[in-house]
Structures are given as structure tokens and as C-alpha cells.
Length: 262
Image 1 (spheres, rainbow, N blue to C red):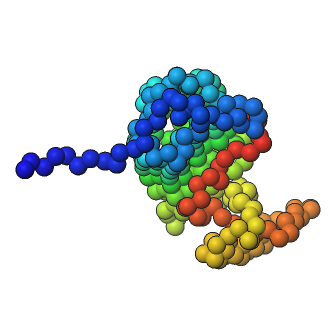
Image 2 (cartoon, rainbow, N blue to C red; image 1 turned 180 degrees about the horizontal axis):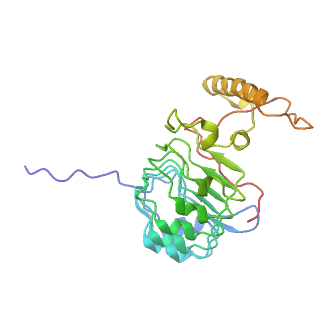
């Protein structure tokens, strides 16, 4: 008996009706198409008929590819593709000129699979490239002059180009857990002040034992760093809160924009 080719997982079929029922209203009144956690393996062509949405969430599926037809979503301001199996991005993503939030964290992207057209997203404020297989960051990303937050954590980076590190509006840069060589001080790759700003405040009761220990370790590190960096004139106080946790790989929703207009 001849052996057939091994078939990949059969994903859920998304119909236009399902897609229409998945449209939500975002905090600012925009229309958000939420198809996250749907077991999708192939980009559903039917959603091209809903290309006038403002936000598109395809996160936590099993997508390996986004088609060139993504260019149909010209009104798109917010695109979440995190936690898929993406090995490449289409060049047409550079046509989404209204995009200000792009999350492609936790995929299988390499430096070669990042299209040069990413640098055309002139209005981009938030970009998450964490948890991929990037060996270097293209210097062309320095063209993203409006960028405020950049995630580069858990990749294979050995350096960060100055054109990216010195972006004029960059406030948060997370490049933790990359194999920077010993000859390069961490402070040269990630500004200490910006590293502090990437930490997230959570209540102790919301953490498991493992995360709590990680948080306490991070808090100890921050206290040591605090002794190095000059104290501000007025200390901020966060009672009953811990300061850690950009380390848990299972928590992939830290980059969801809240309450900030483009």
C-alpha cells in the first residue's frame, strides 16, 4: 500500500458568517475582527470581504503564511499575529500605511524573512518581534521614526543597530534574553532606563508560584540597578504591586494597546 504524504493539522474552516459574528467594537469605537484561538491553519479568504475593519486579530492560531492580499485591509490600524507558525511576512504589509500596532511575536521568523517593506510603515508606534529567530535587526527599521515601543526579546541577536536604538520617540525597548557577546555591555544594547520601563506591574495574587519567584528575582535585580542609576527627585510608589515580568513566554498579550490613540 503506497504511503501518502503526511498531512498537517486540519484547521477550523472560517465562513463569512463566523467572521461577521466575530466582529467586536474596540475601545475607541473601531471595528475589530477577532479570530484569535480559532485553530486556523490557512488564512481565511472570506475575510477579504470584511477588509474595512480597523483591527484584525489572528493571534494564537497555526498560520504559516499571510498572503499578499493583506494589502486589501487599507483601513487597518491594529494587526495581531502573535503565537502562530509564521515563517515569512508578505511584502505588501508595507502598504498598510494606517497601521500603528503590529504584533508578530512568538513565530518562526528569521532576519531574511522580514520584508524590507516594514520600513514603509511610517505611522507604526508599537512593534513586537520577540520570540522569533532573528539573528540581526535590519538598520532600515530606523526609518520607523514614530516607533514608541519595540520588542526584540528572546531572539538570536548579538547587537542592535544605532539607527534602531536611537529612534527619537522610542520609550520602551525590550531586548532581554539575546546572546549579546561579553565584549558588549548590556547597557550599550539596551538603555537601562528603557529596560525599567518595559517591566509590567501585576498584583501578587495573580501570579503562580513559579512566576512569583521570577518576579521576586527581577525585583532584587532592579533594586541593585536602582543603586547605580541616580534617583529621581520624587520616587514613584506602587503599593501592593510587584515589578517584573517580561520573562514568562506563556504570557503573549502584554503588548495589547490600552487607551492610547495613534
